[in-house]
Image (tube, rainbow, N blue to C red; front, top):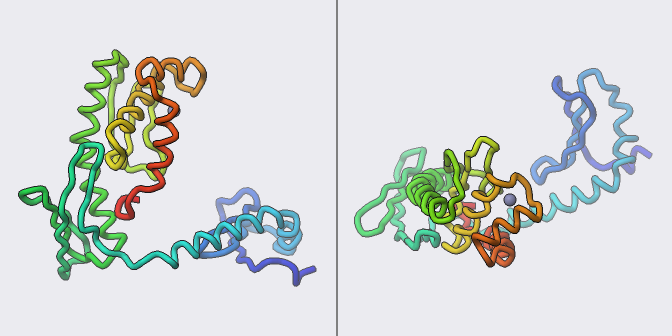
Length: 238
Ligand SMILES: [Zn+2]
């Protein structure tokens, strides 16, 4: 029986209350157990979760292949922000610095300098720049849609979220994802209307969609185009 068990690592965790299984592309299968747990029970747990493990391992394998087949990192030659209809030529400069900085120069030019061979450092610096752009552009846009539609909000902020385009709280605060700048203007307007309508209806009920449709007639087509565009966000911002 033992021989059939998949490769795994066992990690004791003081905070764990029960046994959890984790599969990642980097570490494979990890079994997290509470302190004092009798690890002799692990093979049986793995046997019982075999189907879940197989699926998760297959998914991790695909992720690993995708990561390995990526071309080496290069600073993009141009950065485009479709939402605001702007584009910057990028001048990349390698220096001895450990970090990367982004500076705006005359004539829609960006200077990216420092440890430009590091994808993580470049993405970090470019994302910080994107946040500033997003604050300057998305917030006024939200304000103007709010006054045009009469859909009110109290506060708005821009964040760097991994997957969510925007969110709102019951207290009337809207958070917008800086990466919205990478979508087309129509799609951004749709997302802003969507979030503003949530302040009226904190759900995706029929009432909610009726409200969205009143302010944005093409909302369903837009909702699916947003999901599509989200998948093709350039590497520097993804
Ligand atoms: Zn929603």
